[in-house]
Length: 286
Image: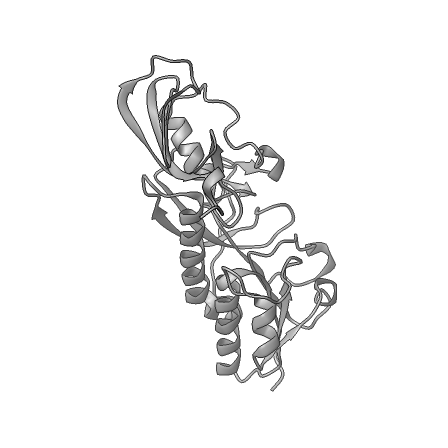
């Protein structure tokens, strides 16, 4: 029995789990056409620290890899964006069954770098949002959200993995209502809305100055700690952890007041900050 066109686009274990959930839900409804898959442009079909959606679709029956341009005119299109790297051109389809999991509590933190901004801002919670895709960036009506806490020691990587876990659970728990059209969506308010572009952050220089409080600097270090993509290096130390001392700084911000194997003590605007990590010069020499 032929049914609607089901498309999963994106990356990581969330897209793979989402594709499986869509396939199972389609089979339960007697719809056995292939679930179409649009991998991200950087997905070369080789699993690394996260599963590859392309690789999954290549080796798993019931899926077909297609290009984004080929899905807009499909019959009864249901499009599921799960960490997809492109904006959907909604004006090119008559379908409104277009859905996205966004890594934030919308309307806050539309756009990019959602694993960094909550930590930079010192927030104690974030969350994931299931919403309909509309024109604009992460502007569509909200269907459901999940809140979760950000730990005092959580890094950008920790937050990202929490996004994936909670985002997967949120999507899978709502797949039936998305397919059946029984979900309820609420327009986003203007109040509390914020947006970040990739250019808002300098990934090559995550700590541009130490003329900040120890709390601000520690948050910045945590936010940019994501070993698969970037690390914070201070005075030849690749930082993996940090803590604020009880000692007020007596040296200018940025001065190294103590240097030892795998550690640095740094002056800030207020308290001294201890950094723990790996000495870059020694990495690879062992």
